[in-house]
Image (cartoon, rainbow, N blue to C red; front, side):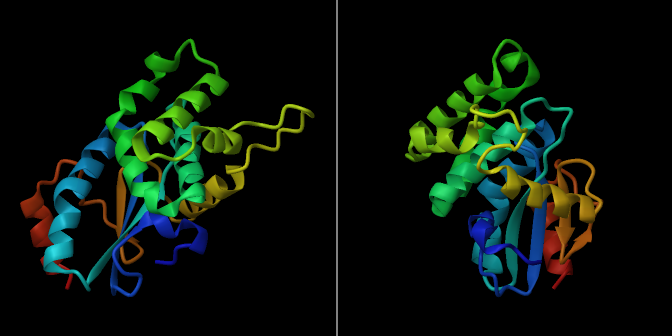
Length: 201
């Protein structure tokens, strides 16, 4: 499926690969974290070795509003990609590893600005992207009240739109070649993925 050029960092593999797996994931969803861990540690290494020219993977950001910090955490990932698109996956690794730091209970007494600062510091410590530059993309203009969002709001809206367009309601959700496959579960082991990938060629 198509991927806007500004989000090139969201892809693993060649854009010329004939088959595309799209993973709709939320950084603060425990089931997304489980699937992402499998993807990074087992699935993608297997695909790279076994089907290097057959499959590509696209990370689709799926904000879930019942997770209070979902929006700003996703914005932080986009901010890092804007500054260095080669760091998107490494920063995603860090976000999922530190996921509980952004659960509702962990941020109950924090302001939005404090969460933005926390995410910006993580970008610097985890992937060496300037915390000051990340924060500048995440903060809102406070000079005039106009509810215009920050410097990555419009980018995030594109992910929201494609998710709605494709009828994605929860994470994780996986699409193969543009078709939602609800048989795929975050509980799948590598052997199940192997069988699945082989059957789709």
